[in-house]
Length: 213
Image 1 (cartoon, rainbow, N blue to C red):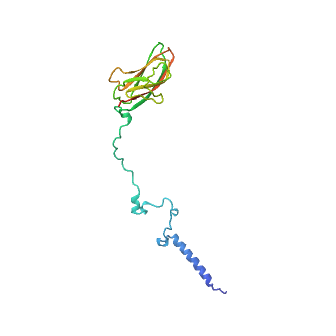
Image 2 (cartoon, rainbow, N blue to C red):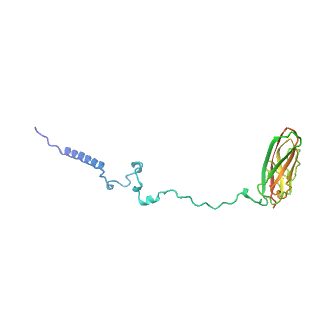
Image 3 (cartoon, rainbow, N blue to C red):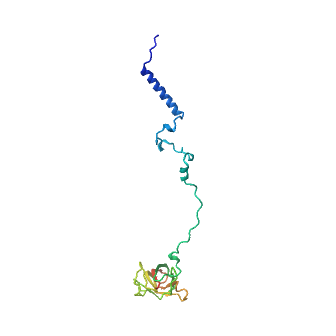
C-alpha cells in the first residue's frame, strides 16, 4: 500500500484548525487577560445585570455612593403670623364676610331673629355707624355711604356696611352695635322680626368694615 505524502497547503490548514481549537480552549479556560482586550472593549451591554459588586468599584466611586438616611434635623423657627392671627386690624384695612340663615317662622307673630357677626380681628375702635347698602328690599333703609354690593362689599373708614341679597318674611330689619362697650370692637348684630306665622324665613347678605386710619 502506498501512502501519499500530505502537501504543504494541507499541513498549513491542519495547523490553523489546531490553533483555532487551542485558542477557543484558552478562552473557555479564562486565560484571556486585560492585555488581550482593547480599550473600551467591554460595554454595559456586555455585562450581565447584577454582576458588578460594590467591591469591584474603586474607592473614589464607592465614596460617591449615597449612604443611609440620617436622622431628621431640628425644627426650623416659627414663620410669620398670618392674616388670621391679627390681634388688631391694621389702619385702613377692610375686612369682609357673609352670613345666612333659614327656618320656619314660629307659631306666634313677630318672633325675633338675631344674627351675631364677628370680626376676624379686633377693630381699633367700635364702629362709628352701621348701614345697609342699596338692595331690592323695602325692609332695609339704604345708607348712601355704603356704595359697594353683595358681591363686592365695601365700607367707609370706621363704618359697617351690610348688603342683603336675600330677605323673605322678615320686617323691621336693622343693625346694631352691642350694648356692652367691651364687645363693640369685636362684633355687631343683625336683627329682624318674622312677618308671618308658620312660613319659611330666609335671609343672607355680605358685610364690610374698614378700620380707620
